Amino acid sequence: MYLLLLAVAPVLIIIIYIYFKDIYEKEPKSFLLKNFLLGAIVSIIITTILYGFTDIILPLTNKFSVFQQFIKAFFVVALVEEFSKYIIVRYFAQPNKEFNEPFDGIVYGLLVSMGFAATENIFYVLDGGITTAILRAFTAVPAHATFGILMGYYMGKAKFSNNRIVLNLSGLVLAIIFHGAYDFFLFIEFIPGIWVGAFVSLFIGIVLSRKAIKKHQKRSQFNSENNG
Image: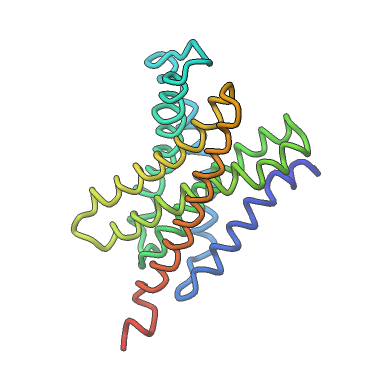
């Protein structure tokens, strides 16, 4: 139970943080929970199925090959995981009437991503123990949060744009790029010191996520400054 709490705690902290950043028109808690659970269950199932196909299409045999690890990071792990989150936001959250301001893209992108991260983190922490829980609380979980926020930023713009397809896919691609970069530097651990690149990409992702939050807060139609 203790390890389970350690695995879920950073996820809950990030969710609470984003919930209070939604300052103009909060989302219904029941709908937030549904998105979280879809991320925690459905996106994991989709990811597992797609991994089965990628193992056949892109068999990776040499873990010391930089090229193969690049393919694994960007075109297997990042593409599969972010796509599994994207389709939930795109076809469940975005069409819903509660998705009624650009910031909601960030909220639901984050909730789905945190659902995925919660399930993933539970498996890793139960297997690796307290050290893994602490390490992932400051690395993998915040990383998944940035992927969700960056994707959601563009999906929030897309909901209220005539250029919806391009903006939606821009969010997906950006999440894949940051996810792939983060994983790639970790996968090529056989190159000494290269893992620093993962933390650089995470830092950049956090900076961009904070900017994305502020921009959508200002754009909200519920912001009185936009209705004067």
